[in-house]
Image (cartoon, rainbow, N blue to C red; front, side):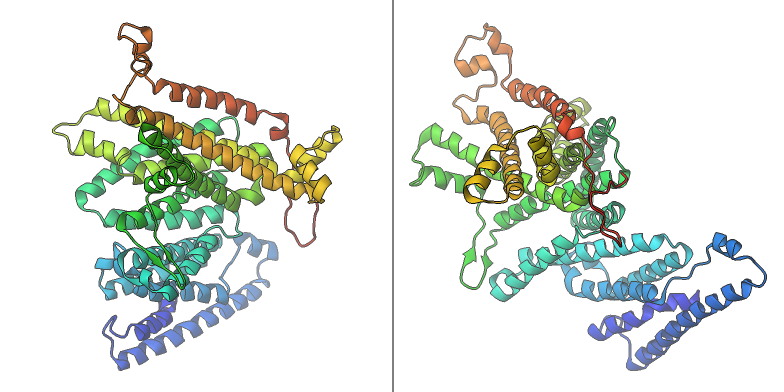
Length: 550
């Protein structure tokens, strides 16, 4: 075990050379550690060689079936060295980027070094003891590296003057894109889920440790409370449409990550960060100011209440477009190769929406976190009924809005993914898709490709309108003169009229909850949705149209 423990030392030496003052080691100590590292590497190679000798010797005393049953296992040298290299690289990388990332910003370098030594040793020991652990260790390391990288880039862009250097900005944007794409690499659902889960874990740790103890406690309560409706919604939609838990976790984590673009943009706006590139400068603007400029400009001339309402509607559409486009991207990148029917795509789009709603409820200071502060932690005495009422209303209504919008988007994405078999079914019935068929007839555009683009654009447009329309309807009463709360007040009727007792918010609630359940009943049970269409699998031999197991 001592030999294996020493396996993480070589890269620690490299880290010390990069940061000479990290542990305050002298040159003599470095030489000693280098000798120990070389001995550890030789010991690992000899241990592997000895394991092979033992297995061959046992053949004279034990049948091969018995040896195989015991599954004697020692990881390949490249696997052990790979783990050590990645762990050491993470440490070296962390010394450069974790200066402002909590909780590492308050740690001594020697403490950080010790932590990575322990983590690297634990990874090696787990791989030796459990063969199945190597995939999960790889995924956890990948998620950790990506989290450190993106947190470090965010720290540089938001809290330093690096955004004024065009070279650093260009490099930072490229790195951010590469790291973001790596989050959705070509792995199995369980590996993807561990990668995304590890990433979210470190981001969550960073958020919590940047806050004081009271805020941290409120955030933990908000997260715990938000998990309850998220679990109920997932259970509800999975009750009659079973899926592997690895896929469910993957899509839930992907939905949480899909909040990153809108949250990052909001951080840029709030801090007034201007991104300097070589020939131009990007100045992020508040969506309201952009829509106001659009409405009051030369394109649309309007003023007064009409201008305010129109500007608000446009800003909600912009927000809806960004959020739905982000959910569409993570849905495609996370699960496209695992879908076998349109029904699968709709269902996983719903899980992505639930993950998005969960992250939004926890991270937005005016949602669950705001309810915890207002009714529990900052109140003279806890107001549980008011807290439960506000939490329940948001958990039911706003989550359903995300579910409806993303479910519609998932349906059209499913049509795009299974364009070929779907079009084959359409042609067998003697029908032709109007837009795709017309463009193919006139311009000879490939019908399948046109149909895919058409379906994705239709899904994104409808989901954006559904999302923005709900936000507009629930905010409209506050923008009108007198701020009417009932239909009677809106229409100027007397209080005795029965419309005076009907809240305006009842309309969007009815449309999106009742209408949403009706819509999903139709989409889930359409013949074209439930039909298993299979998926292509990659093997040593190319297999066309082979059905993959769920």
